[in-house]
Amino acid sequence: MCVVVLAYAHHPRYRLVLAANRDEFHARPSQSAHWWPDHPGLLAGRDLEAGGTWLGINRSGRLALVTNFREPGARAPGKRSRGELVRDFLADDRPAAEFAADLSTVASDYSGFNLVVFDGRNGLYLCNRGDFQQVLQPGIHGLSNHRLNTPWPKVEKTRHRFADALASDDIDEVELFSILGDNRPFDDKILADTGIGRELEKLLSAPFVISPDYGTRCSTLVLWDNSGDMHFSERSFTPAGKMDQEKSYEIRLD
Image (cartoon, helix red, strand yellow):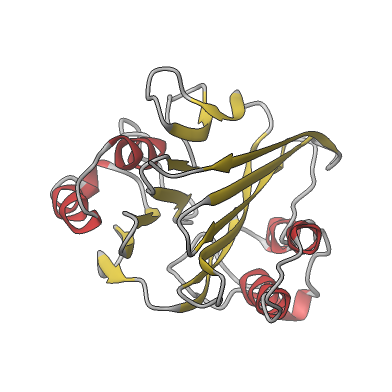
């Protein structure tokens, strides 16, 4: 279960500020953020099992991220990897609306997904559960494994803390990573009920998930300023929740 918060056309200095945790099984092989040799200009981590990615940007000013839509008990053998959605958008050069129109015709080929895409001018939220397309409005948004801005406790807590951090003209990257690093689960009385059982519900209620088999694999920040330049920073973590790698990139858009 991932958590993403983003400020779109909200901050006076930045057209977009994004903070995200990627949660995944620790046994699933992946690479941390890097420039992809087979897709020049694409910066993202890489899922080595299916070849896609969960979050990335490119030098042309495109950004995309995906989270799974939680559907307990749903089994979908043969479905296409959701990570290819991010990869394909970043490798494309069409406006987001054109990409979305084509995706809508094959959206059922994928298990439930939440996809956020920016083409440098416009942002869209796409989901193949419910209304497919939504124009991303200026403001602060939160996303986990249900539809955009569903008020799960971890989403609301992270979004409120994120909003406080963005109240200043100067954004403190350390503070944003601290918000993403909150590993405190919620009290049983306010847990979301998504059909996965109370024990797992409690484990996954923390913004930063720690367990031996499944948890937060990396935290990512993207600061896209009004001049067009981007700052991309990623921290990777062990199953014990200890940081084992940190990468930072400054990108001057083409």
